[in-house]
Every structure is written in C-alpha cells, then in structure tokens.
Amino acid sequence: MIRRLTKDDHEQCFALLKTAPAENLFIIGDIEAYGYDQEFQKVWGDFSTDGKLIAVLLKYENNYIPFAVAEFDAEGFAVIMEQDRDFLMMSGLREVTAKIEPFLKKRLVRKRETYYAKCTKLQISQSEVSIVKKASPGEAERLVELVNQIPEFSDSIITVEKKRRGLEDGTSRTFYIEEDGKMVSTASTAAENSMSAMVVGVATLEAYKKKGYATACVLKLCRELLQEGKELCLFYDNPAAGAIYKRIGFEDIGFWMMYTFAK
Image (cartoon, rainbow, N blue to C red):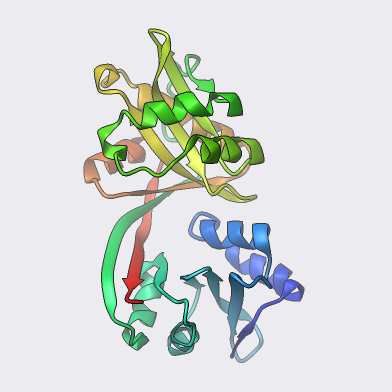
C-alpha cells in the first residue's frame, strides 16, 4: 500500500533510510532540510501487508528519487510521477529505477548512468596530509577561481555566493593545498546531512599534478567525515578515476541513474 508520509512517519522512514546512508544521501538531506509537506517536496511510502515500510519515493521540485529494500509497487510509484505535471526527472539506484522505468509512458529524452561508490573506512593513511588546509567561507572566491581553471569543470555552475553559503551552513566543506602562493589542489563535499556526504570537486592544476595532492585532499576530507560517523559517496564515469578512489577505500555500490523526460 502506497500513501503520503508525514512527520508522524519520520522515525520509521529514517529507520529505513539509515540502513543505507550513502545510497540515500539526497533523500535524507532533503527531508532533514524541508520535511514532508512542502509544495515543492513530498514523500510517499510503500508498506507491506504487515505494515512495514519497504520503499520510499521523494519528490523534490521536478525530480523523483525512489529507494526500496524489497519488492515494491513500482507501477504505483510510476502512476504518482505520471500524474504530476511538473515531473521531468527520475534519479536513483539502477536496481530500483529499472523496476519503475517500464511503467513510465512519458517520452524519455536522456538516460545517463554513472558509477556510484561509497567509503565507510579508509584503506590507506597517507602521512603527508599536514599540508592540506581546511577552507573558510572567506576563501570561497579563491576556491571558485581554482575550479574554473580546470578543464574538466568547464561547465561548472558554481558561484562564489553558492560556495560561500555551503561553507557557512555546513552542507559543504572544502580542503585545499597551496603552493607558490596560490591554491593548486582541492576536494569538497556537497549535500552533507547528518549521516552522509558526497565527495565532489576533486581537482588539481595541470602544473601540479602527479604530486599526490588530490589524494591528500580527499584523504583529509574523508578522515574528518568518517570520524564524525558519516558515510561518504561519489559518482564517477572514468574507471581510471575510480581506481584512485578505490585505493583510498571507496567501493562500488551500484550505478546511479539519471532520467530526463520531455516536458
């Protein structure tokens, strides 16, 4: 049985979500930030015949994110999405979205698949992390300037204001290495919540690569978050990049799917 969830369901909802904090990074963060009854955000739950919550569907603006731990009413979730005029996107773990996809009649415009990995324990403990510094909100402008010099981030939409706000409100943190009087390498988190965080923005200026700087930044970042009891996760497309993360302690947990549908 599917029904809307309310604040009265919060304990049972989070009991389900916290079984996989990294996998549910976005759902956890959105519920913690905005709750269950906003115009732009709603949450549904699918319950088994004995009343146990087995699946959750979160709507945030025009994107839907499902999560399930057992066989669930995939067609019922699809009906909820199709009845929403704002519905344009679905994202989530492949094993969950794949069950909903056949029931969606809306025309698919784009379907993207990326590796999804998480870290709950470091595999290496590089000693030379003393050169890694933690960024303050006042350094937002320099951090954005660094990222904008990296070709891989040419389509980045990060602004100084957004970067500063994330560092101030605790939804993001950044570590960096400075050399020759400038920032040359960095790693950040995004979408931090009480249980998990996503590693993003790992970058090093071309002239300073192959010095282990990016690895040192990620290690310092992961160490701090793991000490706080949070799981870390990240997306990656490039298997070579994935190999670097796996040496640190990340393990693949599946594929993250992103669907875009016609308006």
